[in-house]
Image (cartoon, rainbow, N blue to C red; front, top):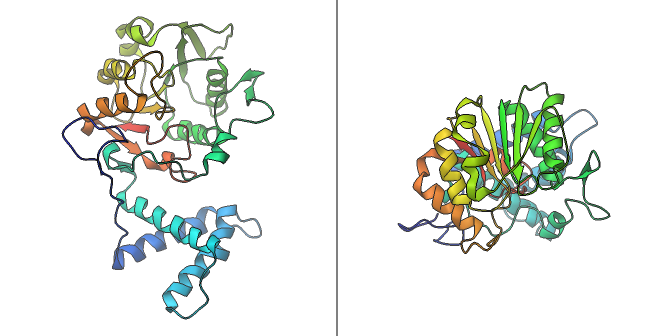
Length: 307
């Protein structure tokens, strides 16, 4: 866990892995995990990749461990499988909503960085309606689940870029039958239109002008607030914080980014400073950050529920 009285970022403080549950607690966590796999991933003749892996690799490993020593040593793949399983059980034991400062520091994701580097496309960038879509394949699967669960009434996006993300989110909301309007801004407003989106020109250093108090006060909740501009992050979040209600979600994409726009403080450190001052107000929702494995998302440790 992170220690110290200063506002630490992920790279500050000392982290100790959560302990592996012991005895009855360990058995309960294992049985709960296996029951969920059987419920959600195992179907007659059509198992998911995870279902097949658990049935044909992990279960024999667990059964062999329960039988005691004596068999042949497991190969490298099985060793990695057992390590992955134990790490998953450790995280589950922490619960779903976790203090940001109790999460491991940014040391990489649960998927290889080479895989993540390819996750937005290689032959071309992923596109939506012909517009570049700066989302990973992991986030393309993750956001619809978050939208369906949260059913936001208002979605704010800081950092429109080409606008493909806003168009895609608006179409996902429409497909899910969710009555939600998107407000998105960037320094340059794209020449796009969509009935579910208000495209704005604005600057994160003057966020109160692009998202004035009057707009934030009347925008219906729940909110999904997406920060993807990486500029004046601490100031932006401090401005928005009083308007967020319990149950709203805040997502900071690419928090591992270095200094952007000439600012000295790293995005990660600005986020850590804000959360240190509002430590009881936000929890990392690990259901989403770890949905495809530990931090397999562009929002590493940064999908928050307002408490």
